[in-house]
Length: 103
Image 1: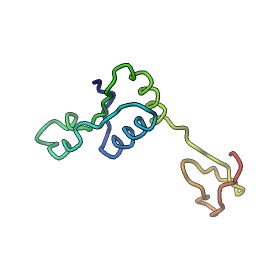
Image 2 (image 1 turned 180 degrees about the vertical axis):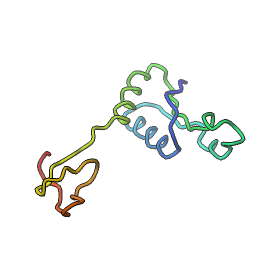
Image 3 (image 1 turned 90 degrees about the vertical axis):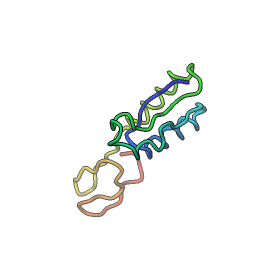
Image 4 (image 1 turned 30 degrees about the horizontal axis):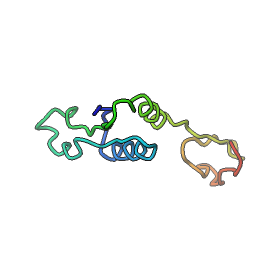
């Protein structure tokens, strides 16, 4: 087994492990409940970890994890002239919906 990475919280750890499993990697979350003792143990030792069952999957799993952590930010230009960034599908300024085509 190989520790792939530590996650900042259990929700992110579960999402990463699920994405790895869906891609065909045998991954699991370890230290799932250790966050409850943070303070009695050093906080950095209580973070959830993603582990791979097969060491030979490391390069592919790291590539997928990197892609998950570095998703491109979407942005589009509204008809009112406002640039809308992130996951927003409606302009904050005028309330117009995001255009259907690529932005």
